[in-house]
Length: 316
Image (cartoon, rainbow, N blue to C red; front, top):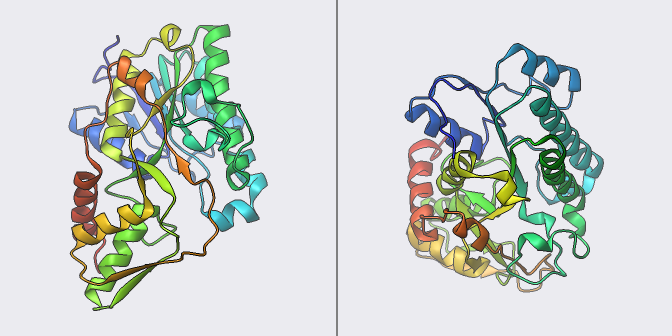
């Protein structure tokens, strides 16, 4: 175990995103003052020279690599080269510079899309590379897989302390409402708008049958802080799954959000819609054995997210 000292210099890439924003707020509330949060304009993580110079000019102790090229279905279809290149080159640059400058610990965030839909669920860490990847997410998933393997191999060869966390779908305050929203953010907006405009029904662009796992962003932040302080990479050997341990159908999720928002109308699903992977659930027993578990129920998390939406995004 290490102590993340208040005087430590901490680099957070992707600090303006859902997870990054929550992590910055948490560290600030705990009294950390040396938090580096460069924007993409200030630091292009795809540029090796820029990344190297940034590490050289700042005495960084810890790194949380959260930045990623992300997007919806259409983006992944139209720009597959960018999804694999941008995410892979960012991982390579961050990991290499972290090694060269003797970073004490690095947290690298992976995605549950690294697992094949041919694998047994819930997915164990050992399921990586067993079967074909979901075609739409292949480029992104390959880049994330390589990032996790970079951490593993650097630990093995250079005795670094680089920790990979593979995460399910994330939601919570500061989600990207209104701009390529995630599932829960999108449904909150739909039901709020329908309630506000007295619509008789809400149309969901899903059959409602597929199941997904969602983790509240504050639980993920707690996991990152827990593992950066407690993880022993020799014990870990490879990455750790971080999730909620239960999945929910889109239909049940919609019904829950309808209840939280207080929308009285009907929900219509697209029964004929062709959908991707019917289920994606992580096995988090390894994380549990190492001392971490999620705390926030899906209903509680949605209530907190909706409260934040009303205060910060409603009518804006």
